[in-house]
Length: 244
Image 1 (cartoon, rainbow, N blue to C red):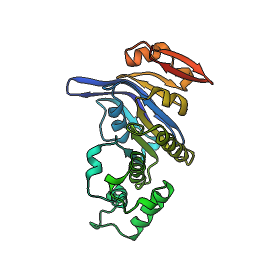
Image 2: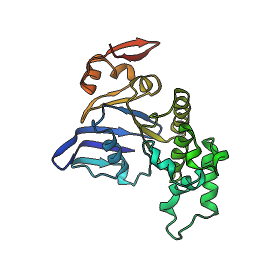
Image 3: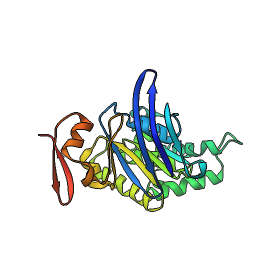
């Protein structure tokens, strides 16, 4: 769907990413892990097409344009906007509503269908500041789905939400993946991605390792990625990272 070949990126003189080879296809889900400043968000923005690589190429099959949805990190300030859930979700279709400055019946019907699927239709008239962390995360995902994307990018979707909510968000993302969406997310939570995702990309300015959790997460890869030595055990066929 999207392929990055030998990608590099710099902000001025500071090289953020280099030697990045990565691809994602329909129905695939990958979690990108790495420390703060490792380039995770920059990589998402390159996949999104918001940033142009300094070197290398971002390509898609036949050169066609891929529709991409983006879910940013949870920002407390965004929840203070005087919007309802429905109004925020409708903003996801703003790019396609170029002929008029308002949303019509079609957009509202689509928004209701998306909210219903994500289990938040009953919250349509609720203000953002009245939502729980999990409800707000679902509203953000609903907004991103309004553009009917083929690829869904999520920046730290598990940050600031409890364990039960993390599980429900994962189940939702897995349903979207099963429907053919490609899903790429970033996270700091090593054991969450190890126990829930089929593919992990370890990133620290370059890709240290990429593959199934059991093949990727070992003590050498973790140390090179995070700059700290940690123990990696295997429990029920899944790696578990422990800070000694």
